[in-house]
Length: 331
Image (cartoon, rainbow, N blue to C red):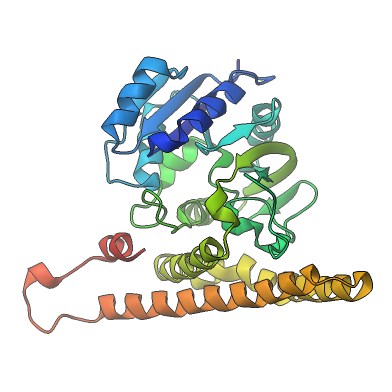
């Protein structure tokens, strides 16, 4: 048995079968976790069902603000392990997932490690969907390392980190990240940036040999979902750039925009020309559309942040909204 506590957070009974599958995948690990913790995010019915039927070691309700950030923080408070892993409630871990990630976390110059996330489509991947934008469905995308490499941050629902992070720099920031089915994000990015500032000599590692399978509902095969996700990612990045160093917030994204996306668009155009079919052109068009939508979300996010930071016209303390609260309201 390892000294890894695994936290799974859920907010809806609609994912019950997936939650059961996530827990079952952890029971089949080559290196078993010390404990499995399930956190119900302000859903009493889900909490009661989990208490009665879920094979988790600890089952608790989110004691903080509704949303993924404080749900994870609640799990961290309950955890006993020196390393804490997070698995999405709609994912299943490969049998050696904990083994790979915990091995990295035992290295003195590593403070956390994340795994590859492979999509399991409800039907099939749409022919217009570019793999460069797999991040919109929470999966590893073209442009990520193909072998073990240092990264700014792993995926939040597929990572294992040292408990020392939470002891020294605090938990996931409330006001950033998902609340129910709202499509905001970046809570793990902000946490990892804080950790990197605290320990500049240490790093996070992306390990593609460790894998989780992410089960995608049918709505994630729709262009409307894709565009909403892109827009909210832009807004989240704008908020992130206001609470951490701007360069750290956008360093990885700059390389992605300047290198990965142009190559992807060109590759798909060439694919269409050489294979005499339209899907490559559709994917190239989606890359341009997705990038533009992210940019629009970023501009809107910056505008909202500017309006929030402007001093109120009167001195009433009731009109003053702190940045975290505003982010929670608008994301």
